[in-house]
Length: 123
Image (cartoon, rainbow, N blue to C red; front, side, top):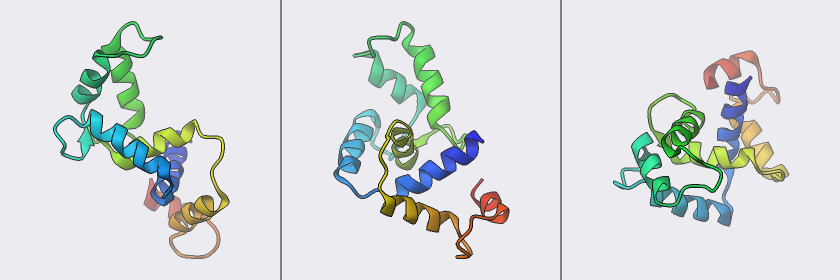
């Protein structure tokens, strides 16, 4: 399911310690206009109004759609790990070490398997 995919990507994002995280943090901080550690829908819209992506005609509609996709927990705010997880969707190469660490995060009872009980705690 989409919710499971998002949970898995968030677990992977929590394990990422590469230089890419510094770049993502800088990008996130530029959009987080008030510096409170989360991005609101208004901040996202305002950040892209000045320089909208080339393929976008209606920036508000595009930002609304993007926000809904990134706000995986429905809190009305995008946290850094959600921002980071969204970037992993487009990545084709995730290291074996990061994948194993993400698996261990989801395997809460350390059985070597991700059970339905593990999944229900995550989702």
